[in-house]
Each structure stands twice: as C-alpha cells, then as structure tokens.
Image 1 (cartoon, rainbow, N blue to C red):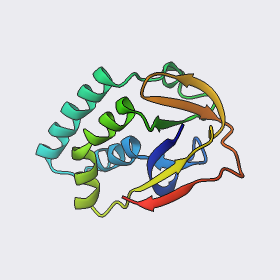
Image 2 (cartoon, rainbow, N blue to C red):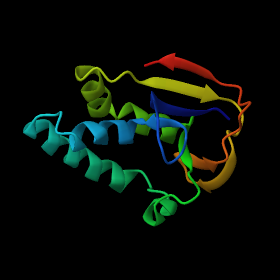
Image 3 (cartoon, rainbow, N blue to C red):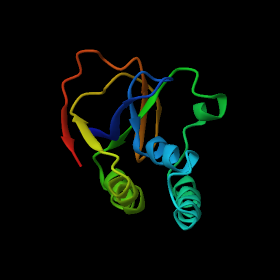
Image 4 (cartoon, rainbow, N blue to C red):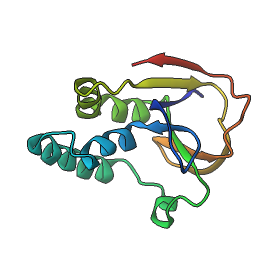
Length: 134
C-alpha cells in the first residue's frame, strides 16, 4: 500500500513534521491573509471535510502523541484529495508551496486508521519516501 501526505516545508511545532495542508491553509485564515470571502469559503470547505473525512479522535485531546495523518492511495483517499481543490488553489494564490510525500511502507506506529487515512506517531527517521512539489 502507498501512503501520502500533502504538506509545506514548514515544520509543525507539535509534531516535528512538515505542516499538513489543512493546517497550512488554516494558518492563512488565522493570520487574516485571506479575504473575507475566502475565509467564508474556507469554513464551508472545513465543515464539508469534517463531515465526509473522519477526524481522528486524538485531535480532541490536542494530539498528545504528536501524530501525523497520511492519506491512503486508495479510491477513497484519492477521491478526498482530489476534492481539495479549494485548499490547493488558496495555497497557490498566496504562495504557499505544497509538497506530496509518498511512501510504500507504513511511516510510523499506526494509532488510527479508517478507509481514507492512517495516523502515525514516531515517524521513522529512515523512511523511504519520494517528495514532489504539487
């Protein structure tokens, strides 16, 4: 199975890993970089994805294991990623470079899994992966 993450080069303070696409776009909203219309659209997209993509339960506790999520290269995982056009377009508009990292091995210790994604803690330091700009 192949797993992939879409992220920036910025390292998230909590996980010590590159900041994922959802957080990267949230940072644009939080900093008031986006327009009021884009912010409204952001919240519409956020609500949609929270409805159709399960939110791993550890986020309710503030992510104590410092986990990162990886999409599965499956019809469900790819479909969700393909629907994320708003996020990719906003990143491009505001100069936030996104990268896609892919691996064919489980990237760390799995603490959560659903049809779309896995969440891992203790990401392998020697993870064999390929990273490309989106």
